Length: 273
Ligand SMILES: CC(C)(COP(=O)(O)OP(=O)(O)OC[C@H]1O[C@@H](n2cnc3c(N)ncnc32)[C@H](O)[C@@H]1OP(=O)(O)O)[C@@H](O)C(=O)NCCC(=O)NCCS
Image 1 (cartoon, protein in one colour):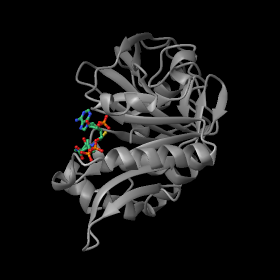
Image 2 (cartoon, helix red, strand yellow):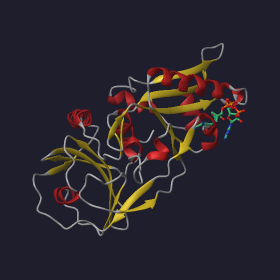
Image 3 (cartoon, helix red, strand yellow):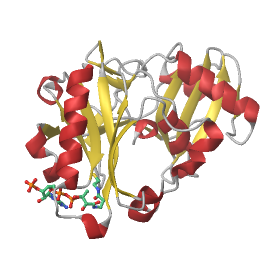
C-alpha cells in the first residue's frame, strides 16, 4: 500500500506473488476526502507457542500516519480501536516490533529482551537423506514451502510462531543472504545463513518434526566453527549461550507473557513483521 511505501520505503506488493496478504489482517485506517489512506494500524492473527502452551496472539504492524496528519491523535485512536477489537476477539497476547517503544508503553506493552543462542557445533553425525536449495521464484518450490509452513510444528516450545506463512515468505525476499533448503528426511524447510566468521546461523525450521541440530548440519553438509540459533533451541538437542540480540527494533508484548517466560527468547527473524 502507498502509505507503507511512502513511510517505510518497503514494497509489500511482492506478497502478490505468494498469494496475497495475510487473510487474517484487520486494518484500522483513516482516509482523506480523496480516498487516500492517511493513517493505518493493522492487526493480524499470529498463533504462538509460549512456554509449552498454544496462545492466541495478535501481531500489530503497518503503523503509520502521513506527515501532514501527525500530532492530531489519529494513531492513538487507531491503536485504541485495534487493541479493543483484539480484546473482543479473544486474543490473549499482542506482539509488535518497534523502534519507538515509548509509543506503546501506555497501552500495556512491555519490552521482551531478545537473545540469540551461540556455541560450538554439536558432534558431527552421518547424514540421513539429502538436501537441495529452494527458490521462491520456482512455483513448485513455493508450493512446497507453503505446504511445510502449513504443517509446521513450532520450532521451539518456549517461544515460536505456531502458524504464519506470509511473513516467512516476505522475509525470505527481503534479505538476499537467507538460504532456504529442503530436506527430504524428515521433510523440512530450513532457513539459514553462513556468516563471514564461519558461523552457521539458523533462522527457522518448518516441518512436522524438528530434528537435532547435528542432523541438520550433516544433511546440509555444513561444518562451521560456530553456530548461532535465532530462536530458543530447546528442540534441537543442543545448547547455546544466550547472548543479547542487538537490533534497532524492540519486541514488545501486551499481556502478562513478558513477566512469566521461563527462559530467554527470540522471535525467529523469519517471523519478523
Ligand atoms: C509514530 C506515528 C505513527 C505517530 O502518529 P500520530 O498520528 O502523530 O500520533 P498521535 O498524534 O496519535 O500521537 C500518539 C501518541 O504518541 C506520541 N508519539 C508520537 N510520536 C512519537 C514517537 N516518535 N515516540 C514516542 N511517542 C510518540 C504522542 O505524543 C502521543 O502521545 P499521547 O497520546 O500520550 O498524547 C507517526 O509519527 C509516523 O507515522 N511516524 C513514522 C512511522 C512510524 O514510526 N510508525 C510507528 C512504527 S512502530
